[in-house]
Length: 168
Ligand SMILES: [Zn+2]
Image (cartoon, rainbow, N blue to C red; front, side):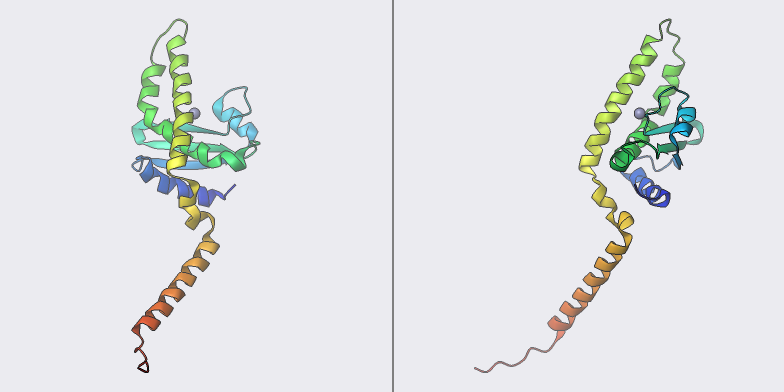
């Protein structure tokens, strides 16, 4: 799993991709126990969660660093949690529904989760993690970039050189 700073940079770039660039997104890397408290649930297996404060366009994304699959799923989880920002207004409406059996609300949250799970995979497919090589493999990227510059200087010096006269 990348460092907190790397994920923060990726979130800033993804904000433009996912059209939530006007939101302030805070990232927290939390333990399994902290995640349980944040989610206020008995389940320990959440990889991430996103608390939204729509009136001040602020979101707090937490990633569970103890999750057994976090190394493989952190990118999908980040996308998933960022997608929740788009339904913040709907969440408020649904929370205010008074439903005797709470059916409407549960149904909405279930369908919203299912939709987000599909969307995270679609977006990760269209916008794969390789878009962030410059953040995740910074040293390799710098080396390659320097090599590229040396190569283009070389090409320039060769093409700018006076052609040698060939014998007829
Ligand atoms: Zn979700």
